[in-house]
Image (cartoon, rainbow, N blue to C red; front, top):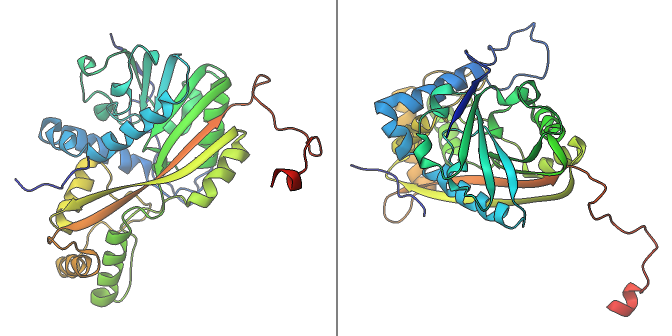
Length: 327
């Protein structure tokens, strides 16, 4: 079977019995709707149930890799948390890595009910609580000033109101609580994006978006600061995966629940355009062994809710040594 070459006691609460947000229209009130979150929930539901969930588990490799890197960042914080809220948890890629030395309990919050319940409690080492709710409406289900730590492992790139969700995360945290997030950055799948665009220009004389827009890394620090976080850390990482061809990549994206969900998206691509895109992909980006690479850019963010006990920068002019002497 051909596949990509990969890198390296439960309580249930339900707050969304249907898809959390309807498709936007001309009379939509609120943030501009870039993504059709109704369609995204359906895509994730289908991915979790296709072949009994087997296809979804086979394509966990990107999220599992990022979850491994995220737990390393959490372990750098020498603190045990009573609970950790896993926002946009999916089946719990990150929470499965938690143990009793880090936390007593993981709270999984996910908008796709089928994905939330895909994996049994036996795969977790700590107590698990599952909340079926919309990530964009966090404060509808979580009390302000109630969480010691909130993490989000590859779900924020589907949020329409990212600044608003960051504010909600900060409000949900206790003072001196920490937020650790990983989201896909703007260079994710640039190989696929450019190949499809060039093929559509050649075959159809125009282009339409087939890969969702993603946040630029330069904006994340500003968004965290505007949301009220302090002690910010933002950095960039990459996960690169090799596939036999563009078609295996697109198939895996569908099984991941990561298909296009832009409002007003085009729901089909002509066969000759796909064939041209595959040829362009190999010509521009192909590896020597005939496979094609796909780049997943990861933006890492860490922010803390302000608290009186946190270290503060010294006042300007309070230094006791001149930089001239130091240098």
